[in-house]
Image (cartoon, rainbow, N blue to C red; front, top):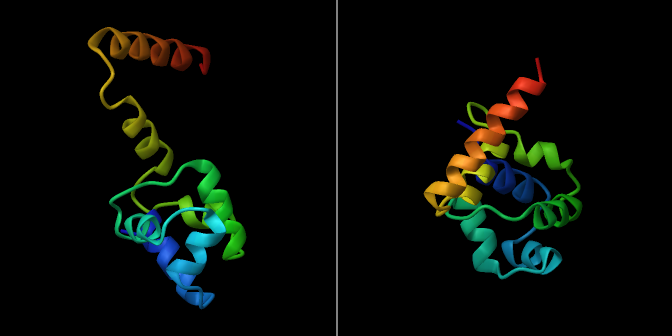
Amino acid sequence: MSTFGDNLKKARLAKGITQQELAKAAEVKQEAISQYENGARIPTPEIIKKIAKKIEVDVKDLTEEKGNDFGKTILMRKIKGLSGNSLEQLSNYADYLKSQQK
């Protein structure tokens, strides 16, 4: 399965860019780039845009994951740690949004 980290590393290496060079362009530490590539961390949308610009690829080339939905991965990380009440409100809102799509 191709993941964001796999896509990032492949694109970075194809351009001959080091993790350090990419980190400087994205305004993060080299360790963060390493963590993005090995799946330990997911960058913010702003950082993804900076990365894509530096390695001259479309954001979708990095974020489209085969067998997985990157947007859902980010959403799951955002809701981690919400209180039970907040999760219930979020669930109700999701139900509302689904009903509006019909």
